[in-house]
Image (cartoon, rainbow, N blue to C red):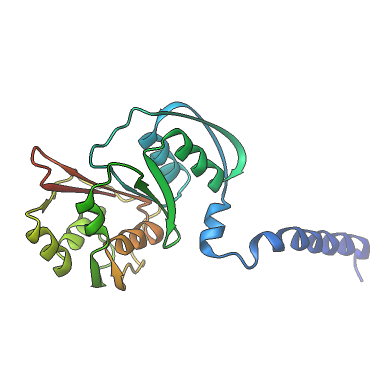
Length: 222
């Protein structure tokens, strides 16, 4: 047998790694795996929206944000962590921005207003969707329009005299783009559709708010 000592050392090392990591990874749900994602962050006096954007863009954490009826972005967050789990980071965010709370939905982080919640946005997100089956390779604006054209969504918008903001600048393909990704989903709601998109595609965040003088326009960003 060639290099028996070396072979023994390599085998022993692998067994030790398995023994150390297996309890941490095996048996975890997707939500637990997400919340245990280790992060190193250094923010000083940054806005709530900036911190969430950094988490989704730089660290690929899927985050959905339902903005309050009267949105504010005046809280300045300071977060300094070294290799700490995402759950700790989310708790620190909520402590410093008490207008929002976080929860895990569909293995995605959703931030929900803790006060001044917009009941129409809440109802829209909970609107039942029988099936969402977009063509593969759609950009984020095409996906937004496909959601707005769902019969259940159109009925909700019409009944409340709401429209969806449709315009958007040109988009460019991301290094994470994958035209083979299937974003189809059945028996869900609008929140489930949005969470599916940011969990499975290159788009890692969604934000929903109302805008305009009469608050009759829904803005959906991804």
